[in-house]
Amino acid sequence: MIGYVTVGTNDLAKAAAFYDAIAAEMGVGRMMEFETGIAWGVPDGAAGIAAMKPFDGQPATVGNGVMVALQAKDKEQVGRLHAIALAHGGTCEGQPGLRGGGFYAAYFRDPDGNKLNAFVMG
Image (spheres, rainbow, N blue to C red):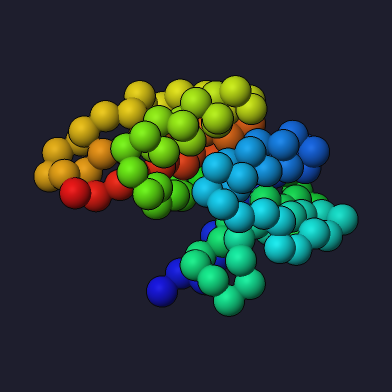
């Protein structure tokens, strides 16, 4: 249902390093690059993610209650994605672990403060 998600950035170089590492772990790379943003994923594939400077020229801000969820292939990848995020300027919002009902997840923020998680069901 979702084609892609865009998060705002005020530092495209820092966002690029963060999402390059996350995308590499998930087996994808950059699919589009612009002066103001980069998108990762596979054209005509699963949902992608983009980091962009806001179109209106104003500073990017974090949406309260907004979170991007990255579907991992297994619990081990959830842990790797969390560790990669922290190693590339992200901050921890919740260690990898079972959250109930077979939902296993880890939570983190990118260098601009956008909240993400990596999860697996079952």
